[in-house]
Picture 1 (cartoon, rainbow, N blue to C red):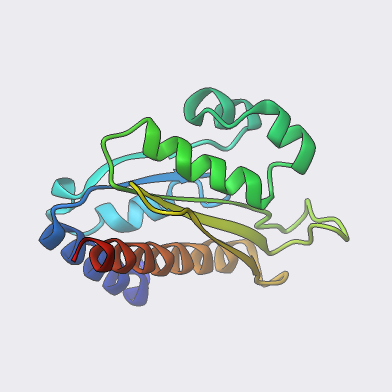
Picture 2 (cartoon, rainbow, N blue to C red):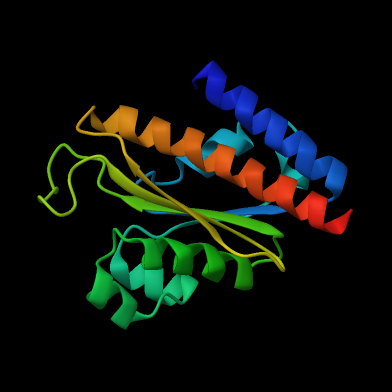
Length: 169
């Protein structure tokens, strides 16, 4: 695992642990790499509540409650689907913060409207407005797109955590 990703994960886990908050993940294009990065850190079980790998559209609907009409209307790689994935993971878990991602890691699968390297990341927090980022990494290679997504998801979860702590405090 990349040292930068491990440091980000360790920091997020420590901050969540101090605030007594739990995390969940809902992943498509990363196939569980966000959860794997978090759980690479010893002691992560007191913070990581669960992870969903919902690679297919059917799994997004059945496991996370993403409405099929949202997927049909916007496509799996879209802001509404990423938001629904994060919110669904939050609803269906005991976590306080849920991060989600859906995208096109490549090398194929892109279109002019949704090119290879486009990823939507969303983070939902209990009692908070869901955050979203559209990332356009470009056709930098499958592994690089997935690693960049993990990094950006961890960073966005850190932003959500900061907002939650500020609103509580």
